Image 1 (cartoon, rainbow, N blue to C red):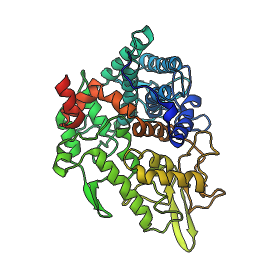
Image 2 (image 1 turned 90 degrees about the vertical axis):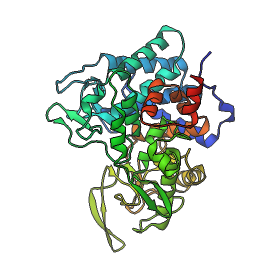
Image 3 (image 1 turned 60 degrees about the vertical axis):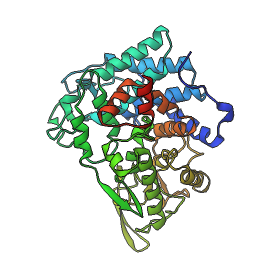
Image 4 (image 1 turned 180 degrees about the vertical axis):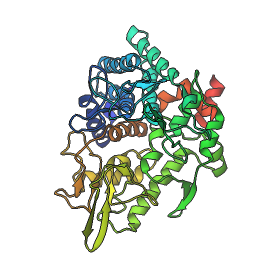
Length: 441
């Protein structure tokens, strides 16, 4: 019998199902069926993103359970993806797909070769590996195709040589380029790298030591914003992406034990801070309110400077926006609000309704929410300027986090993943489902 829970489409919340249906359509139509690669965004001749491809692999189980994709079709898509990464060129040449088990951030949609002289990316490789491991957990049948999914996914994850990309201070480097070597920056300060560190510590073949996680956590910043104490990071997505896969409810590392909460509660607090910041609206942007918030790394209307209502405003294009201390130019990202659904549904759902019904940001678009909008920069729609693009990195978290809120399926799959469990324990996590699993091991 399959270990995953059954689908319950007849009891589905129509709004939540609709959000998932539209977002998942991106992965159906913006992928190359021959190799499984998923386009980074809906721009002409744009390359694939390995992060978007990893999200697709994670979304296929949800799509099967919710009746958006047949199981056989999901198996074939998953196999095409895994076979591509297994068979693609790994080496030092500048047009390879990857090196030492990691992969370049952007790959040509057709050839699968490196695009734009981009970096070999540790964090984007982690999102890809997480998708592979989710597929391995879900496709648990005894037939040849599902065995191949499990074997190939585990082989690809276990091939990554994590110590090669460890920085001198013990943290994990951002990546490497064949032309210039290692990128000078490393993953420091709390952010989306939580999943990256868990996977690096959990490797059964080339793991990093627990000291790597301790080095990362030593750079954390605990702040008090709008009356809320929490582990700070400005862009909202940083509090969400790792938790698309890992259930942090009730489990804690040394840092969280010292502060009496867990990472799930921390993400709830970060979400509440975002709403309070938008309600206070210290910079006076149009539209901000308790039902209109969500500042994160996103597309934007700039770069440009405009004088609006007597105030000189500087706008950027794609940058790491955040609140309350990050860059803010009035640009909001609806997807980042939806991805906070498990943490704070009582403030997320009214905001989603505002985006859909008042600002008309969802229904007219084939994949639901575009990347972002800006009501201070005027535009033809009620939402003002609206990004012309959809991004796979935005839409995947909608599918996964809505499902975590509805059934917990993505979390349940990864609870049974040995690499995730080992990585969490080596990072010093205990409590909750981790201790329950230990008792039943």
